[in-house]
Image (cartoon, rainbow, N blue to C red):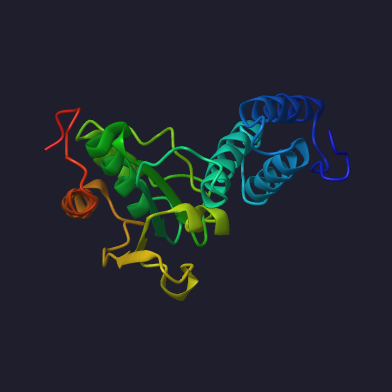
Length: 223
């Protein structure tokens, strides 16, 4: 492990968890990226989450999940991935409400026929509880997701970028397909007020999938 790149101030448990995460990533990306690149992505991901986390218990796991997504994106950008599925990136300000609900609907409707990612220009520390409850009402669990930033390789790897209120902070790369969805920000709203936003997002996601040539299917009772 490269000590110069390792985050500072880690507990023994956190260091051990990061070492284990690095070993898993090195194994999973063997032949695609070298250990130095993998550790750099892992440690920078950890530093990002550590800078805004209120509870540090799950930081190594979150860092591993985000680093894995970033490495998958980089592999696609560099032509090292054989995954040809369409990839959509949903972006909003806090990555805690609109973009998380959109990703939940997308995964529900597209299944494994396409890939959905999400990010925020100013990611918060947790997903909006009202958004979680509103999605649970239609049988979609988004509690396993987490607010995260966007990175250049993730934006570049996306086939379509859907922005939701992040304005000039949203990344723009020439040649990318962009759509700006005008949606009310659910921050601070109760569940009753979030439901119409949830349903609007559902309709938009269905239209998006149709435009990508992906059949819309529902695995749950969501309607």
